[in-house]
Image (tube, rainbow, N blue to C red; front, top):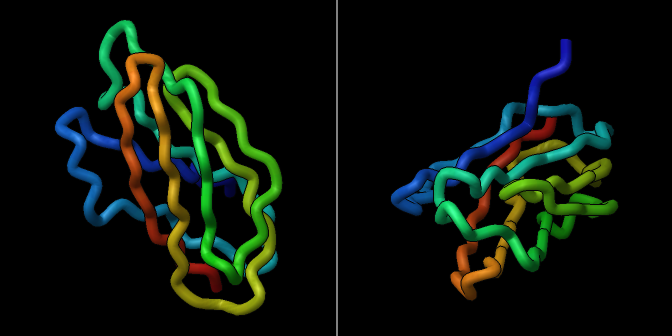
Length: 104
């Protein structure tokens, strides 16, 4: 069964405790950071950077309507890792969050 791997950044911007559903350590999956609720009505993601834990492999990433979608590949070992994402918006606002994922 496919489980969406999306974390939503709240409108207030508080991003503590974000986590993705568990995954297999050999999986290559899309992880989505949804900044939509945090963005203003006329704001959009202008630039983004995704930084996975060093044990994980970053493939490609893209932005789409307030979201940053990163393809992250296999990890070197099972465990709990963090994936970071930072954006700059079209109105020059900056937001950086990280979310945990447990790989089995």
